[in-house]
Length: 500
Ligand SMILES: [Zn+2]
Image (cartoon, rainbow, N blue to C red):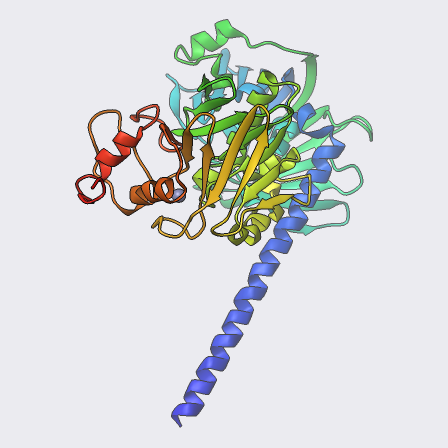
């Protein structure tokens, strides 16, 4: 009896797992399809670069007011003139609308980054907040903006369905609004955007924006209409396009005194270079609290460690390309597989550098190198396959030319950190570069144990003549390098017999 129950239980578990697997595949297939359709539409409309160009235009048309009039559902047409600008590179956009209804009334929507400022036709003051949904009233007025948003929030992208003429995709923006968008099957153009909405009296309804184009080739619409609850709410003509517009800074200053126009450079990697001698230097990654060692040889460069992510890897490469325009990065050597040491791998493989590592990391690194990166295409690797230079456990090899030399030693056993670990020893400089394992705090002595001991053991067993020990992590609140005395001091308490 018990066996039967167990059998049925295991059978049903197996089926459940099968379903879960199938569901996961359906989900990824759906995303892949939606992504391909979006990419196609973006490409047809001139690509991301084109969509990211700044735009300024006017919308002139009629708004229909559904007010407190004499009969139910009566609306009154009112003239509306809006000035609209999008500056995608600065993530800044604004709308300034003048409505003629019992005198001139103004509506302003201003957004920079995730912050929105809204002043309605009947407002007394600005509403200011992160992620105000009013920003969408502006976004939906420009198809290129909607495509960019779909691309930005790709992670939420889904294929909804299709009709005879259109493919229908959906995504969620940062306000949580779910947009459905209708892409023309033949042109790839955005025909329509809808969102599910709710009205206190009328209940559920679909908010609809439609775009019209003057001919079959252009991606710039000439007309936009807005329908609420199936009723026309507004209709505008696009006019007065301004090529290469600039930000109206007086207007921005008036709306948003705290907004800055120079936020383009924020969040970018910050690198500083410090020479150790003619052939060695440290690249400090200030924003990641990490360091990388650079070794210059006669005809090439070697980078030791690739912290954290592809962006950092690319920043290091760009930095070195400017500093050493005639020397390629031939090798990237990583001490071990952790992300703060190997996370930037893809960037180096992409420029054709060989990776110096240990055999135990090859399968893992290949997995990283072959991952798809549609959500962040710039992180993918184009140059494949990767070339590896393997250092098997308990072996060493030398990279040497008349100008410089490094001995790369595998000694992971006993590090109490990873199975396989590469140490980098530079005999000319009497310098040991250690990816992890030991800390040299800016002030005082820090008692350390097995990891730091493994560094000491390596120096002893390999009979290395070491004067300076450089580390890759952390950057801040550390000495520039540690000496043998510093290393011994950090071990003195836990290993009192060491110096006997
Ligand atoms: Zn580590």
